[in-house]
Length: 205
Image (cartoon, rainbow, N blue to C red):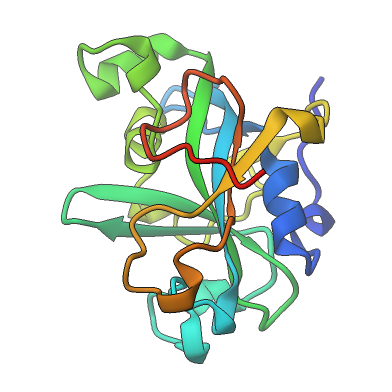
């Protein structure tokens, strides 16, 4: 049986390594009936805390919205954007190390029928190929804010590590306001995976 990722996986200080290590892992969110709905993580973005002008915690910004980021790694940071979509972030690092990794896309694995019900009629490759899309498909909303990622409501399971040769990196998406941090190659995705978002796929390596 797959093993849940332990809390020490998330509490490492090297957020870029955590981001790369999340690729290929399985994200599981049981539905209302308790049936597993899951997908393989195929795209992520790292946000590097106080120094990162694209991060919600830039400059040490501590608010009711960001307070979970300042806690220990291994919890969910969920926020609402554009008045339409929720986005799921994995809090990383030790206490007061406000870094997160945004889950940008997953490849459906289990209960794709439930994802189709939630997302509506469309090609399967479009069900979860973006951070807002995957949250709808998995039923993730603001109530998941602060949820323990080693608990029973939402969790990640281990899977074989992805070889470095299978990972591409490039600039993050939608952060034109972030000055010198715009071009940081802190977005990672699985090469040739059809569920990676339609964001620019210009690879840094």
